[in-house]
Length: 303
Length: 260
Image (cartoon, rainbow over all chains, first blue to last red; front, side):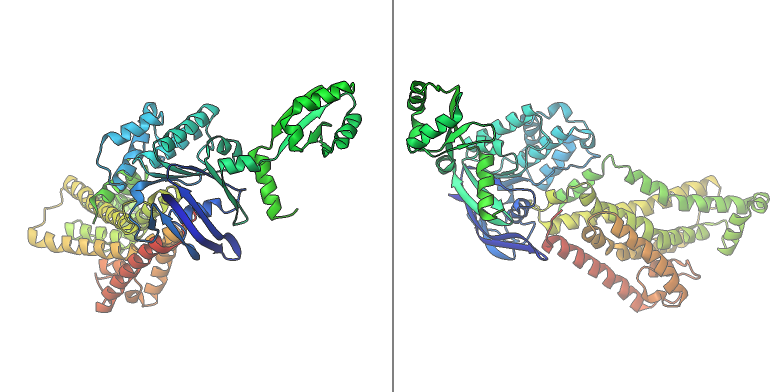
């Protein structure tokens, strides 16, 4: 089942185009990573998904229902948009109880449960205004999770978290997705997204550049064989004689993109050794999500 | 009216410094009335009081409950626009200054119910402010030994006082829109300041009976006898102001793009 679908979403603020013809779909139980530079249109799209910003054109369906001002499925949706803020004069528990009331929840244990889950119990009587940035982020996540939503929409949820907190959130999201919760997560921390997302989409200057699954992403990431010898010029000549295109990178290492060489580095190593220029360094590497992202947006906007 | 929303709104006030501050600020009026009465009952103090004595004299203040109630009504009719304006600015504007407005927009509680909850707390808060002034006045009056009025005297005084409170409550409603539109406190507080300035100028020019924010003051008797110059059209203006304020506030919250 598609939990989120958008068709031809457009939104402009004056002359600034925030979203242009965005169509995407997110399946149930997926962690969907939504990537883009600052100002690319991520938050505008998230606000449109939450009904906070009205699209100029296009349609949104959440949980199989069309999003209109009369949409009544908000208790199936949890969200955190940009920096999470809470009422600074209220304690952690009071803040959550405000949400408990506004979400019309009926199980009293929900506030305690979510505090326990987000490790906020020891701060229950601490005013939100005095919490550390990381704990404010946890409180924001607690507000998003208190009602056990089927769909979680998170905008930069790991900002401000320490490394331990980042790992905890990663594990929490994986656990939620395994239990069937769909997670739509935007972030500029691409490494994190690459660790958890089942599917990613890239937005740039309001346009959807690409949407692909983790498997498709893996197939599209550039792979290389990097090597270095005592005589890189001779090694490069030999590689070219074998029909392997190679280049020298900024670290003065040779980079070969030919799949035969990438799949059989031991053969390359043996041949170079026979020539008396045995590799002092030889390793296959795969482009990371950051490089893929930059390659994708540069493809759209030639520099 | 939705009890969950009102409960949530009431909980949000907990621990806020603005709640006691509003009561302290509004409670200055009965304190001032108490000082006037003290001076009137002690002519030697009156002689030494200078400016305060002149003010009490100009207001034709006498040491009785009728004068005291008139002072409290005038405090609501003129000062109420300021204090009630602060209350409504705080209730609606804090969601932006605290950064929590976005948390109120995609909930099972409708956006209309959120606005209704805020207006309900606004009315409750202001009624408590108005009533607290009566209590403070009653305590001060008792301490000064002012004769207890008969019920036939007291009821019309109470009726006039709460009618002034009601008119003030209505005229302040549109300020909620300025809090949402300006996304914080500054715009609505600026609007409150403007209404007070224009109320003085327009009332002085003789058109106060048509300017909504001057009408509670005129009704309270701040510029002479209570209700002087007001006609049915004045009360229609106040009602229209309140309805327009409610309509535009609700419509903005429901339909505007929320980007903050």
